[in-house]
Length: 118
Image (tube, rainbow, N blue to C red; front, side, top):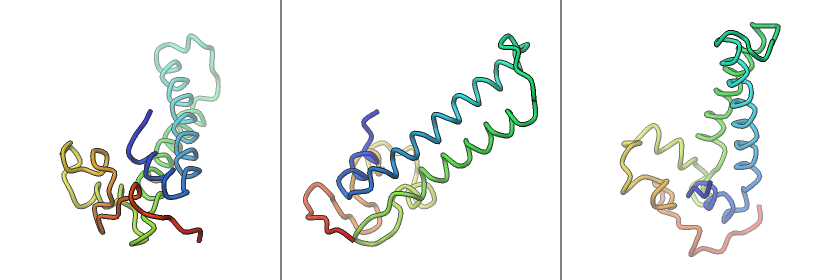
């Protein structure tokens, strides 16, 4: 998965935040598949119905909130993904953050900037 958020995070020395998102997303998928298996007649013979379903929902919410808020623009210190989700048409494929890779708030482009250590 080569997204603009990943490139933005790597270019601004925040790649670890993207990897945390990937880990949370992976746990969500595994817990969700296990929960789905239980829903489809429990062919994996999973016990403990409540905790598994709760784990899937918790990790789904954690991964989505982390995805939206963790990576910050080094210039304006705000989250490009959160801004896009709350202020723009998320489905606009031509001007959205995922198509341009430029901060939609201050128009910072990590490809052409020198990033300083904080």
